[in-house]
Amino acid sequence: MTFIIRAGIGGNIDPVKSGVASGWGGTRATKQFIEKFPADLTGIIKAFNPGRNLPKIYIPGSFQAKPFDGSDSKNSLSQAVSGSKIYEGYRYFPMDNEEFVILRNPSSTLSGKLGDNDGSGKLVANGANIKAGTKGLYYIRVDLNTNTYILEKRTIGIVGTATPGGWDTDTPMNWDAEKGYLTAKVELSEGAFKFRANKDWAVNFGDTGADAILEANGDNIMITKSGSYEVLLDLTRPDYTYELRLTSFDKRGIFHTNGQKLDIDNMTDFTNGYAVLKFKNVTSTGARGSDADFPDTDFPMFRLADVYLMAAEAILRSNGNKAQALEYFNTVRKRAYTGSAGNLTESELTLNVILDERARELYWEGHRRTDLVRFGQFSDGNYLWQWKGGTKEGAKVDAFRNVFPIPTNELRANPNMKQNDGYN
Image (cartoon, rainbow, N blue to C red; front, side, top):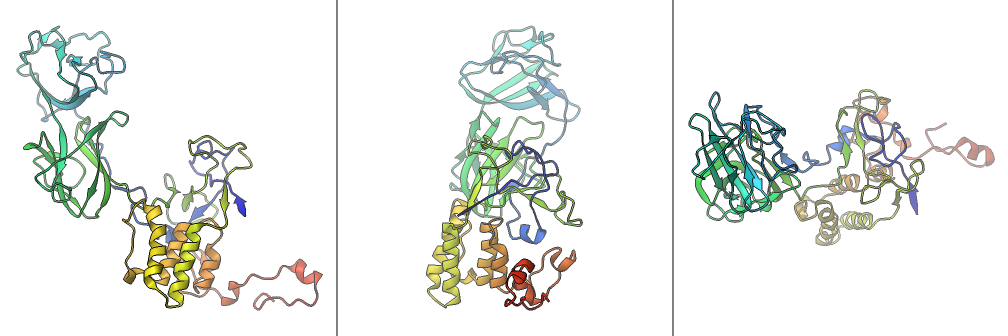
């Protein structure tokens, strides 16, 4: 048995991306529900820092999508020291023997270009193209005080107690052409790490201030949560910056937060509360369903995850084999986290934990009310959520509301029926 659902659209959510014809006041969630998920809903532990906007010079070359496009102001080196005429940065050359020139200002005609006639590192006006060697990441430093430059190929790795190789063996980073920066997928444990070049401490970067801005010889970067990470390093910005993403995190928190506020002050305002995007009328490739008004997206009423959680609950309620209950519970968590990062131990598994897990796993699938009733938390329990009982802070209600009233037309059709207690 399935239900047909429609994505929750409103605020600044794009209905086209959700595969529906137009916006409507769709589904949202209270902050008490959102808080059942880890704070890192996106898996991002440390986000890129855009840094400063520094003076630049430009390096058009054969590696650009449009070769030697001197008007491309994004293809630049940044001022290394405030007020100086020294500029530096990194560029990845995808082919062997790439060439480039130096421009003080963007120019479609390469007016005022500086080059190197003999490969000596000396810049001259209208000189020959500067040539790199084999493909890879290069550090470029230009000193316009002396009209000289440095071109050095570098490999970047991460090293430290948080990494598999400790402080002795680098975990290499690879260039991601689509993203435009270096990446590494690695298991990190609680501890510290730094970035370094060419497996040598002569060039290393840390993060003094823990603001995602890298400094030469800066402080160690601390990892406080073990797990599978994607480490991303952007050396193309004026301030070198990095991002840490957990690849093993609870991926079930599918919410739209941009333009939304967590607190619900007004239940009729769609921007109050996070919007739920668990269901969309799109295929796995992002294509819209066959009908934008009557979505193709069904959800099953009976799922294996539900069975595992019901089994774990039944075992705990009957004082059965808790190890078996834990195995069922962690089977659900492993799928949600795409790994064992979310696994619990026997001592951590309780009925309240199972109730919260059912909320995370089965939300918007028609289970929450009956789950809360079964656990004694729907009406007069100690679990409150915004606008329960008609107040923003939430309030207990009479226990008779655990049972629905019998519809009036049913009572009229059968005079022998009696209305449920509390609804008279």
